[in-house]
Length: 104
Image (cartoon, rainbow, N blue to C red):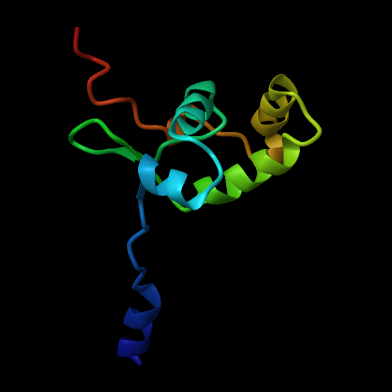
């Protein structure tokens, strides 16, 4: 019985994707992913030691939603909608600051 409880608590690690992997799996360019991240439409989960953004699997759901909304909405409308709580806003607490941002 204790073994069954241990098995239930084991979670596989979250897969993290570099921007190149996201680009290969979506119709978006590297620059578009970067722009959407800068605008707050996407949120990187972590940064590598080398300063590269890492995204979790939720980025694909978010990009699918963006792709669909871009058919009928301007970028400004899309941004307002996605940052609204009804779409699950991206909180700044979920974003790590860039490791080099404190350097002068």
